[in-house]
Length: 362
Image 1 (cartoon, rainbow, N blue to C red):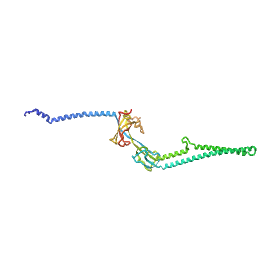
Image 2: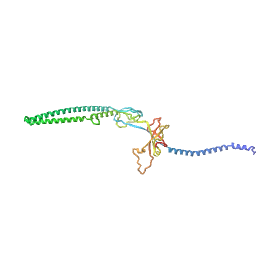
Image 3: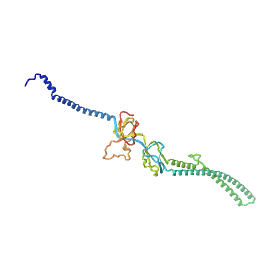
Image 4: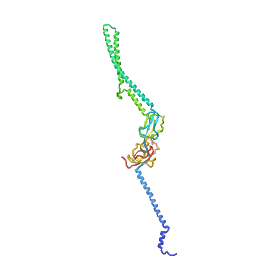
């Protein structure tokens, strides 16, 4: 084989132009990338762990939270038949708007009866005043009768002394005097009784008790008549109105429908008792809603419950037994919503609350 006249050129061409050179470079690059990936994964995991540890110490969150609104159950204060239903389900109402009406006819009759009782009591008072005046006249007549009887007795006594009359006439004259005195006492007693019936007590000065009682009955009848029109006590949205039907008999105190105050909402978040060590009133919170995934509202801790949820249940748990298992309790925390929601919040929808534990009131 002939010698290569230019060995340096051939060696360079062999090194740089041969297929083995790019393969070696690519292999070295892959090794570097592989090592970078192997080192970056533990670093990322460590960074994520450190962030989680810092964040878990800074925030407390729970998805056991629900939107709360004031809900008032409306009950009629008088019973009767429904003659009008003025609202529909989910209708917005203002203060004083008519919800439904009960048949007023029986209550109007009660008002008329009360007015009649007032008139009768007033007539009775007038009769008592007349009797009082007549009793005064009777006293005057009784006194005159006493004077006449005494004068007659004195004449009979003078005649008896002279022997011109009998003992029977003298006794009769004495009897007339006694009768006249008895009639005076009776007339005086009638005056006292009439004055007593006309007197007024300290609870209703200047008015006869019978008249005052009749007026009170009339006022109660008017109040019951007014209560036949059931109106909204505050502004809100009507709920459960579908059970109201015209002709239905309502019982006093029986819930008829509800009104939801949808303008004032808050969130009741049930935090684990282990999250309360650093939680304080006034700490900021972020609220999100399952119904509106894109919506987040600012809030703050308004109050922390006075007891766990189990303490206020109808049948509190009794753990005094041999099979007791400790369960982390939940404490209701009231979260005030600071933002004005761009969408209508609905009572009872689920929420998630995250509280920043760094600040707050002492």
